[in-house]
Figure (tube, one colour):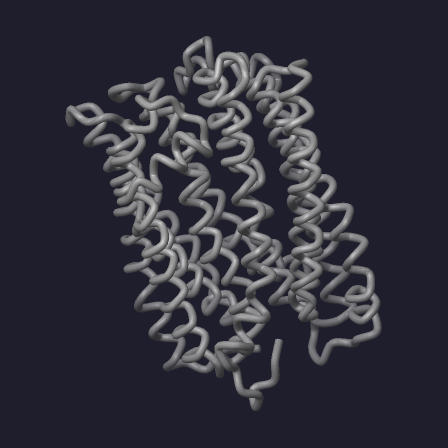
Length: 438
């Protein structure tokens, strides 16, 4: 974090934020890369669909630990706060690993995925195999996000990028090797490659954090640090935010399986998520940068907000340039490896999702202000509003509209995100009127 008397310029924000943006872009490349590999392996359509379903469940399992990066950035200020949040992280990471382990128990998996969600049998088996290989994923994510938050709080954002480079390179080598050897089906190969990458990143992040940890251990806090109850009270709404948001993905999967063109919709879903995530990642990466730079009393709020506005407009314009031009075919067919019919099928929902990256920048900016103010409850409530809107729209329109399921889902995701932003607007306006606690 910077002093309140220092000037926060656009160039300074960019230098601090750009390594984090690079990190998120590298992670965003994982989905399209693995989807492209799976699309070129045996039985691409069911394996693409299975990988998308397994990835959605893995994201739900890791949801409670995703905000540990924001928590560490905001709270790790001295030795005691570091130790207490580290212990909290270890407990939480172990819990989410057990959560995913419960899902891969065959009887539990059959009950949830086959009987309740209604996955076709040709997708259910490769989905289970992919989830089995993804078991290390959520726990490793929790630990590496904690360490990365420590690095960000210490201003060492470039080291975050180094760890992610290790992740992506390990994942790519594993993915290409598994695709060449062919010992696993496409969905299982994708799950194993993701697990290898994230474990490698966690180990590298732990090594790179040593100087920052040594500095923290030499510092003594000015006041009483948050105890376990205080950390839980601060973090629980943050944990619920990605949990609610990521739970939307299995809900979307559920409705796509009951809409028009179910197999095609499920097959293009990971491709569309992968492409739009590249641009949404730029907004997601700004949250921790804003927490570190805006100041504990929001003294640099105006400069940070203007930067967020420029970033959001850039993300929307760039994705629209791809979706509305022949670049869409280049991505969907050339890079993602979709057959021509599937590529044509995916173009309209891609166009409908063009506003999502800009809205992601907007809502992450709102969240960063509320995290700094230690008012985390509205953050999770806004996400619940968004998820409820998506659920209602899917439930209303999937059975009645004669549209492909993926098209209805794209509209629902866009409308839901906008409603979440509207909910947070008055809460963010009130921050300017009431002093922020430190």
